[in-house]
Image 1: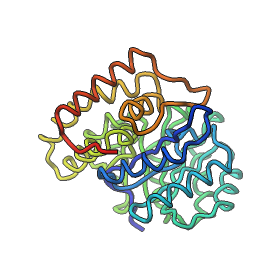
Image 2: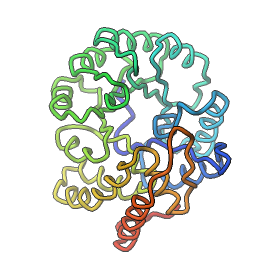
Image 3: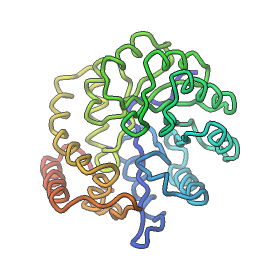
Image 4: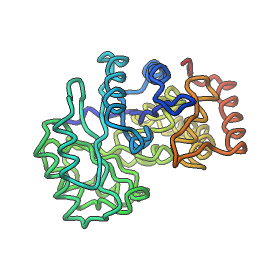
Length: 301
């Protein structure tokens, strides 16, 4: 089955209030902001959503709120990952998946499985769900890489339909793009590498930046997908400094700071994450004012 995930996906933040409880009203505001400004699909309960700090009740309520606010406007993808294959399967099979379009699953972290272990992990998960599965390769967090060879093996499984590639290895991405089945998609997992990856054959991105700047980033992605890399390059360089500041002190600290500066949600984080420094906050404020003054795209929350 062809993947639905093309264009700009947004890895949603989880807003918290001053007591570090989930702020569902602010979540609604974020979701409406990204939908109104042109993203193509939503990813909830990913790394950007601080999922390791959420309990099972919060995860369920976040998904329910996301589906309610989305109201069938866009595909909604839910994150299911972990380093215990049995627990991941139990979590998926116990979860009411009504309204969910697919699963994003990060490669197991910490226990550093071999390539055969990674393959068997995903193969086993695929046996227990009919939903499309998008692999997530992020070695900087998991301490292991899904090789191109392993990705291509997994791409032959019917309901494994894509990969979010955040390895930063363009050679590896090119190998996947060159040899993958037609219906398998590679999505950028790194906002800053989205343009070069689309130029090589990627079909979109799962973006952090799009939480705050969905119009700007969607325009960049769509322009590149249309093959207009001259304009795409201009848009890329307009956003480059903003993206670098957003990630300079970790994710989602930078994007939550930006959302607070834009009066969309507060920047509260749950430990062990902490807020960005005043230096980074001031730099982000300058970038936001610059983008607003250029009036590139509508940024109404």
